[in-house]
Amino acid sequence: MTTAPHRPATAPTVAGRPRGRLRSLSGSIGYLLVGGLTGMVATLALMGLVLVAATSVIGVGIPAIPEYLRLIRPLAGFERRRAGKRLGTPITMTYAPITGGLWQRLTTALRDPANGRTVAWMVLHGVPGVFVAVFAIGLPFGVLNQLAIPAYWQLVRVDNFGFVVDSWTLAGVSALIAIPLAVLTLQLPIVARWQALLARTLLGPPSGTALAVRVAELTATRAAALDAHGAELRRIERDLHDGAQARIAAVILQLGVAGQLRQRDPDAADELVRKAQDTAEAALTELRAVVRDIYPPVLADRGLASAISALAARSPIPCELDIDGGAPANAEPAGIGRRPAAVEAAAYFVIAEALTNATKHSGAQRLRVGLGGTAELLIVEIHDDGVGGAAESEGGGLAGIRRRAEALDGRMVLSSPAGGPTVVRVELPCGS
Image (cartoon, rainbow, N blue to C red):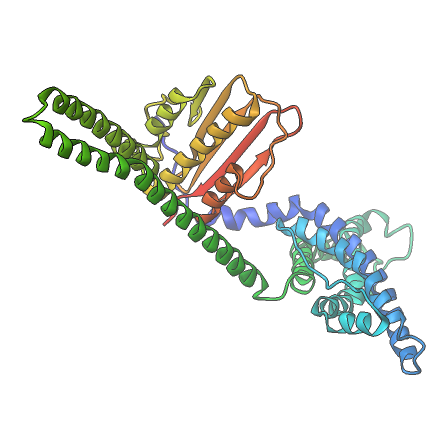
């Protein structure tokens, strides 16, 4: 096998920057030109806002303030989508609804920080955005013009950067001026990114909002996980109390009666002993079922893939397994190894619940369970060819699947159009 020669890690970066900027140059120029249009609209809108504010001094413009602030939101929304696409991350902003009477609408509009940030963007983007657009179109044409001067300087008078081109020497100097202009032109992708970052800073949520939303999400998922855990403990307690505990008590009673009858009626005593044995076996079976519901031993002994294979084998509907793109069903996905116990247990119960739901409600003829992902993310997909139309309901199986996923900072995606098929996709992070 031939080994490629070693190259410094920084070489591609330094060499690749101009090439990368050149490839993105046309898109950056287009972005800045559209930014010039939004800058003109923002400038006009800002002038209108100043006029409304001026007329508010005499009371005429006061009713127009909340409506005017509402009217400029689409412009900010357009810029938000452009910047989000440019940066590769959607930008969201929530405005307070402007409703109610005049004073309520006015108070809401003036106190909403999103409106203030939108006005700040109009100020900082308006006129500067127009100037940047002029340079974005002028610099490339300037480069082409400087390179073309040696071809036409004898035909027309050329005033070029403070001197008149009247000789081949000055024509050559004019061509050399194209070099710094080209260098400036290659900076346009950076300027476009700065413009997008300005939009994200002012038109996106304030600093700390994302963290607050994340904390709220984690608080909600933690509460849901605690509720689910409490419900699970109550179910286990009920199963033990009504099942195994009652049977064991019956065994003790039967053995006690058999001991009293041993001398007087040996046959009756033997029959009670046999009944006690059957009852004890039933109690043991129920205990095993409870233990399996808490954490299936096959998970600890043989891994997630084997545990899923056992689930598929018990399914009343024929179930096909797709373990990491076709790996053997008794093998863990290649290159990933075992996941944390909590992740494996969540994946197992997600699949068990999904198979149960499909058996009860889908009317499917075939099921398929997929297991894959990476070392950082376990992906589970359950697919059925049933009637579709599945929807989450409070206390239902799908809601339980979502709670299990969100408790581990994962997510569930449900696709179930009318007529099918139904696909339940669960993503479970495996990081520490």
